[in-house]
Length: 551
Image 1 (cartoon, rainbow, N blue to C red):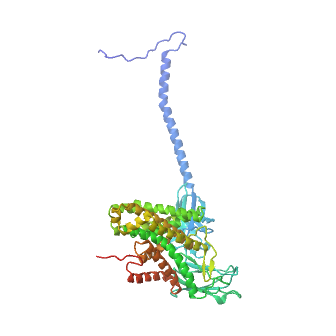
Image 2 (cartoon, one colour):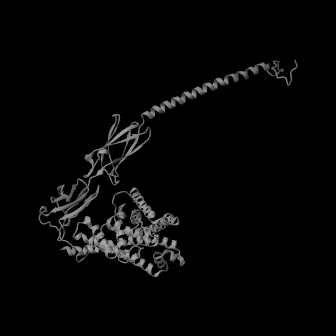
């Protein structure tokens, strides 16, 4: 049979030439074949060894991990997000094989090493908590899972009980042994306390609400007396989780307050101050309404934003006056951005005023709780001008910071008045507020005017927030607490008029403060709303508003 293609080579075993050591070719070929046969065996052996080593390492690592714990860190915080130092806690494993006591440091945090992963229980020692602080029943034990070889963090929540407290000092010396009586307005609670050697006293309250705190003057030590004209019973309104300080002045008074009329004079100055601060916020709201027809419920959050931004800038080491200027610029710019991003877009889509008003309500709620998230629920003070001695003018006493704040507010309001009456842009703003279509037909850039109004309104509201924070401290909802008064001032003065907002703010500020001479302070806002109703019955368009034909 004929074979096609090349013939495969065959091994030839023949002697090699002499001089090659007498070796033959058949001695080399078997060696090559032998190495090829051994190679798979060596590879198998090497793979087995590697797998065995890997299995050993994995088992050792797993065994080590089973016995390895981690770091457990935690913080003890109250209702306002403030951490509490020197609080004793017990950390124990759920299996019951580990327990260790720890104490929070000056920052309110603790840290310890747990021996193994698993579930751990953290319990607070109630005896180590400050007076007025307790552990809620739902949070008596906090559970935390610690992963193997890792760490975990836990927040232990405690609750501050409502309380009133204070310190009695006579001629720079603490008054010990004096009696303090605290009674609820509804007469369901009554408790008496005695001042300590440091003159301090505290009464824990069963719930938020109205209380009357009385100094039992007959328990004062010999020679000590209540300042002339100072009351020995003070009404207080305590909010949830609040510790309300109450001050009873003792010794010779630097003020000459002898009757209700002297007190009314003091409150008139305070009302004028509050009215000027209210005007800074109200004018922006009134101008926005006049130029766009928008009832902006979120305008009060610009007041809060101004106070909070100034606090952060001041807390960073910037002097408060500089911080206030920076804040006005920032919030003015943010007011303009708010118009460009939100309100102008809604106007271009011909969104109805009712829908825009509801949008402003939602924006107000969103911003308020955003402020609470970043700033916290506690009340904070600026680093500058927090404590100042008052300047006395007869029966009136006022702190220099409040006097300067009134002067700044007056200067800003005069500047706004000049801008509206004397500048081209101010006159254009009045024209847009009077008749937007006619102003546009006259060549006025209505959208540009509205943008300027938002910028000025945001800056004025921020300045009002800073001045309000100086006198009343900074809180995340401080703008919301005066929102009703802002609307009352704008409505009372005449919707859409800047000068009406100014007059309405002064009237509201005076009635809110002076009325406390004759009515409880808890009802002070009622007087402002009462005068609003009476004036609108006589002038439905407001004090400086224009009467319009309906129908």
